[in-house]
Amino acid sequence: MNMDITAMTKTAVNVYEQFKEFRRMIDERDKAKENIQKKLIEYEKLSALGRLTANVAHEIRNPITVIGGLTERLKKSIPSGTKEKEYLEMISLEAKRLEDILRDVLIFTNKPFFLREEQDINKITDESLYIYEDVCKGSSIRIHKFLGDVSCVYVDKRQVKEAINNLISNAIDAMPDGGTLTVATNEDSLSGKKYITVKVTDTGMGISEENIRMIFEPFFTTKVTKKETGLGLSITKKIVEGHGGFIKVDSITGKGSTFSLYFPYRAK
Image (cartoon, rainbow, N blue to C red; front, side, top):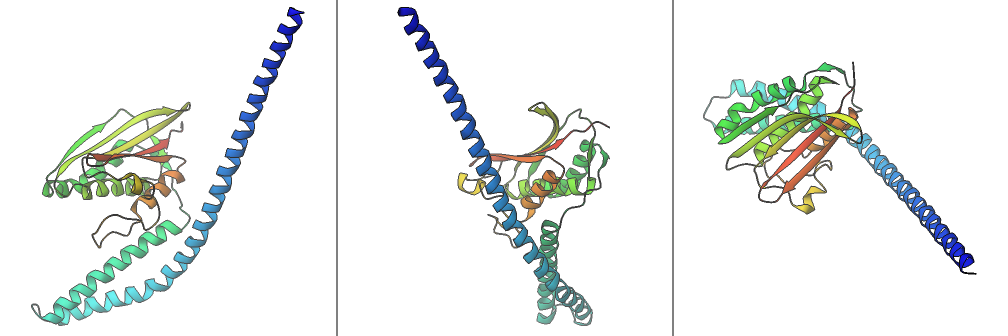
């Protein structure tokens, strides 16, 4: 009788364990399904927004180009030091700013085309840092560079350089009173997959938990300067994901932020 009870107990335990495993599988399936549905809804919204903004941008582009061109012509015929010359300078600057905004909008909304070639990510990173050396000196920002012994990676050099430029520019803006800009490259392995990484770290004000959920949203920005369009991080995310990689951000309010680009390694 005791043996029967023991056997029944073991059977009941096994059935319970199987039930728990079955329940876990169902929960995982439901979560996966929910995530797919959320991504589809997000994709549909972004697609609709992309079509709308692209059409608007194309319509606005020509008039702005005309305004900018005519302004430059008028500036040549107006004497320096006059109010008219000052107004024309302001119109010219604002027209240029609108052209830059439209360029970013079109980059973000258009389907990206990547010319992938074997590239040295260290060389691309070096070229990006060189562009900002004088800006950093003028802003009391020290540059620390740690370029690891990394493998070459198949990427679009122009697009990747733009992504790195965006991160460096943001890091500089985050340190208006000076600080340290650290840029590092390395190799990393996640879930058995090899990645080439570029990490940009600043010692600036950091990003609040509330804003960190929004920073990759199109047109979202916490900057007060008029030159910002709020598309830099969105474009950067689009570029790295277009290469099959991803972007990560770690930030502590008051201490700084680290943005990491992960590009998947592919053998020649």
